[in-house]
Length: 114
Image 1 (cartoon, one colour):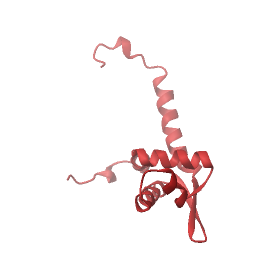
Image 2: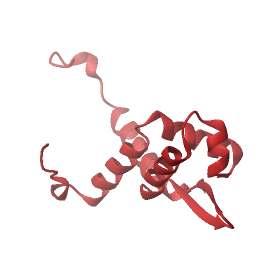
Image 3: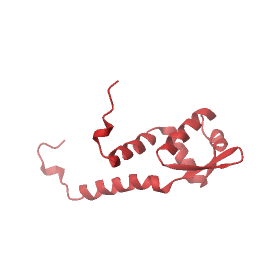
Image 4: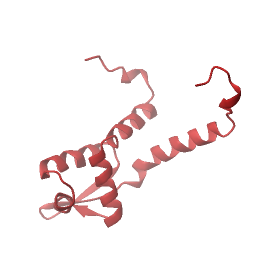
């Protein structure tokens, strides 16, 4: 396995890569969709909804939380999770940048373009 060279990239690039990695698994997409649909949830609710074991769901929740995409509060013996709007601002800003930069690009006139 190669050595990571993440220190050679900007903090913004590393943060965006971490967010992209976090949403790069279909179970995590399903978890985010469930949280968005229900406005918040408790881990036990996800176990009833998704075809995954509770420890697996907990691991996915941990990855989403580490990436800043969800936040959780302890309520008794459970943790209630909800969307962290600030975490999605990074994705939104990057997509807006791509959209802005590609508006004036015309790849049809470049002979070396794919």
